[in-house]
Length: 289
Image (cartoon, rainbow, N blue to C red):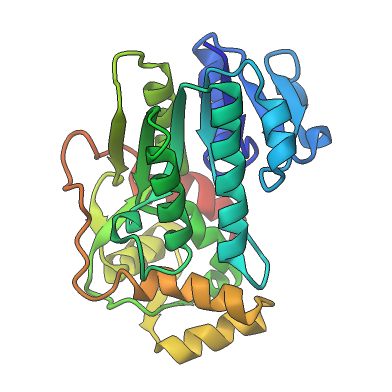
């Protein structure tokens, strides 16, 4: 089976590529910048130059591909939803024209809402478009990435991080490498058919208060978590350089899942993964602080 992987240098793609290589697969990596491929991978992978927002490049790069791990690229534009639509058109056209029979899509908890969850709405639209193709498709509905904490390094150093979510509301937190392990398992398992939803909830649900305690313990410095209102967070996003459209979409990912939202897939042995936030902070985040 010929497997293509998009965003192979991303938080998940980095781990997925190596997992496939360890499994004896020679994956095809779709890269906007092939020159950024790690030297250690060169003899173990094939590389195609393709921008996931460019439909023709993606179609050309995925000829003779049987399965693809698809990630909608992160947008930094004024209209991120338009970028999600472009990425969706790319994968849909590649599947149609190249008769790709299997797609594993990196989606998110909240995509089941379909509307009202900011940037996650873009992932929901990709899910719907892939479902209409009548192929074997698995949507990985992932929890909150541990690696999102690396976007708040300066705040962590200062001892305070902020959120618009209630401090006592719990949600699934997950390590990107665990998502990659699930992705590799699903890609390499030939037995499933049709449409599959695979939640990836991490080892346990955590509140932001619990996260603050874990960060304090593992980093050896006090880290307080402070709840702020939507307007204050929006202004922070603008100050960080986001366009108004992007700031609204990013904020919507939190506000859209804030009021009584319950994931469609319950936590179970199927959706629970092993890496704890405590171990991830100790092994990966601490060296960045």
